[in-house]
Length: 542
Ligand code: VG1
Ligand code: CO
Image 1 (cartoon, rainbow, N blue to C red):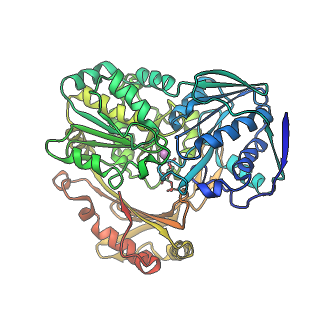
Image 2 (cartoon, rainbow, N blue to C red; image 1 turned 45 degrees about the vertical axis):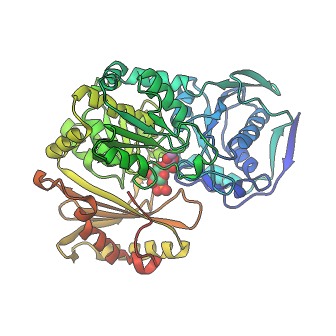
Image 3 (cartoon, helix red, strand yellow; image 1 turned 90 degrees about the vertical axis):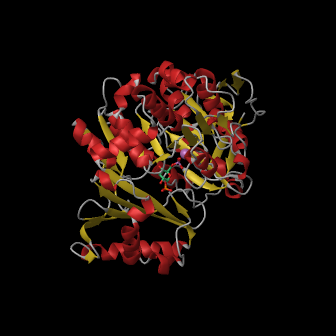
């Protein structure tokens, strides 16, 4: 039954910030997906007879790779695979199923917010038994294995029917096709006050959610329209499509512009939300008030006790280094721990497992908590609705009062996408060389206090991650951070993160780009962005 297939290694299967991401034609090369999946199994121990969770965001090539992964799991000796119906599982839902059913781990198929389709992106990611992305030592082991792999094992069997819920035999392994939504919706109902949110909505508070043709459609329909009684049609683009309708399923000001414009208009809905390809990101827009992801983390943390699941308070907060320091001020006031980690959700896992932190966030529209071990788009959206329902104030009021109390961290990220890889690397190298000379230097009114290449030592297991982004900190709490994306699939993406702290409430109404203009200019002056990339400006501003 088990067939051992000789294969030749590929040299480019290095997982990035969140798993292996490549264009579909790369994944479709002979044995490419098989090699990577076998490398995962070869890097793990003790899974024989245990349960694995498999699901994806429904993008092009999802079903094909799921069939391969199922047959390879059977050959590897797994006892059972739980797979979402239709091959669908949002990333947070997969994390929940791994935890709830004490699975050994999971394979999540997604390239998140990147476009899908025959020539677009695909991805494979391994999650460990805590439900979170594999830590670096495992992803490194997978990469090392993929460079020397000589064979993979697969059972010869017909494809599994992914569309019917139930248990099936696959060459001696059980395949359980599960409802992708049920367990997740039940968890959300435990964490949040659905009664209060339902009352808010039935009182005329208009909520719209844009699922962007991606995985959260069925989840949002069940939760927002069915359980919270929002009118039918409140969830837009609710059918997961293999190409996401041709869009970037990226919930930000650029790609979710239609929803944004709608909610920003005077007679628009009271609350708008969007999520990404695999359901782990979120965008929250109140009527005429966009909430930055960094502020969202801070405000959720400050108001956590509104939600039943967090009524006892939160243990601590963690944020990725480029995320603004807004949450730090909340942690300080609450007298709880605050942790600054490298970019990528995998760095939060140990802190959550150790009970050090409850809520975590990234500036890249990612917020979540220890309820699962992934960031969670719908969770953040429901948290906001719960806060609005409990405080009986609009999103704009809540945000403005937060700024008045803690000060405002003006924040923006400028992305330069698909720039020449060598030019991007040269820019970072040149910046690194400049670091020692920067402290004490002045650029206009801005004086550099410190400058470094961020390095992180995990406080739980002592593992060290270096070169995680160059930060230039100015006196008074302003800063600029530079790093190269680890999720792109063509060329390099330079991310420039700009932040300025403004304690004075009378200065909280400035347009963000204007408030940051001097820092943006200094970032270019120090890094030579325009000259080195040949670009006159960023491709995406969020
Ligand atoms: C980006 C974001 C990072 C996020 C990662 C995965 O990584 O910046 O914060 O964790 O995407 O998110 P990078 O290396 O491109 O900056 V997702 O929703 O794509 O799984
Ligand atoms: Co995502």
